[in-house]
Image (cartoon, rainbow, N blue to C red; front, side, top):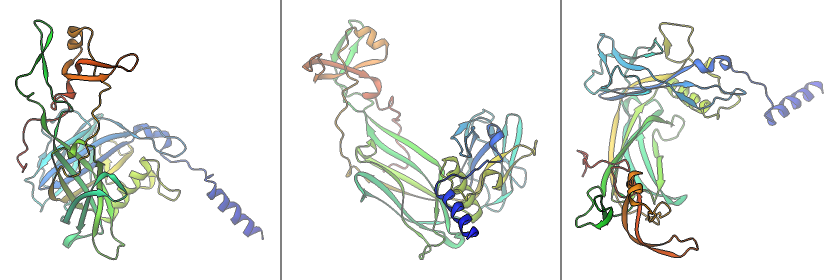
Length: 381
């Protein structure tokens, strides 16, 4: 009876989440350097450096940015540097398009005057991306989803890491109908289109979306959602393209990266290993007592690009909250505001319509100021 009672008390403690936990890193978490890195043979390698912030009650807080330098070295001593080396930063793109798959590689980094190195790594052959589809999210008709199907190929491990680059053609929020005559300080109707109405924008996700298909009946990933965005997003305005990249991961690499990701977000379970029990493949060469977290992978990467037109676009209502009729045009211009167009908007003190030429920030009429570029990508169809 005593044994049964003890078991009940123990289980009740688990159910109520009252379970003492003290990480062995709690007193030194400010000094833990975290590395995330992908050595891509035949592509662009990425390395990021962060510092684990103080956490409470055994739960990690988000990582803080820290800076240093990083590079890749092969087993013949040849080094590969980022373009802006030796400038200090927190993330790096390192050209490794021309390296040999026959060599072994490691990451090296200098942070706060200390040298960090990864284990020597052999590149794993890439998976195969079978298909990429873009369609409405069946659970949310106001969202567009990107689905990927893939398998490991001859070197399949049951674990894949996805990343991607996105590029899309979009326009500024308003067509600019007026320009400012700074001699007379008055608006003049434009006789030609504003030059920066259409642009391209590119963003990248250089981390890894971790996928485990090791226990599925079919030895592949089918229609895995790697991204979703609103139908009102400007990705849908004209043409959108996504270049999905994939690498095979070893079981140990997957488990480490998955657990670190969950703990860093505060989602680790009671039975997850704490960071002190997780064997990173990175060490501080100049000070072996330094705590290091993170994992470096080496692999050949496969990629596949698809395009989609504007069929899913649901234009949002134009925002007018930042538009105004200036009292002082010179002052407004000097603060970075520009004439947008002639409008009638309910802007009065009593909600009445006010007619006139409304002004707004440059980004509302200039797609370059809104983060775009006028340079058409080489791959654009």
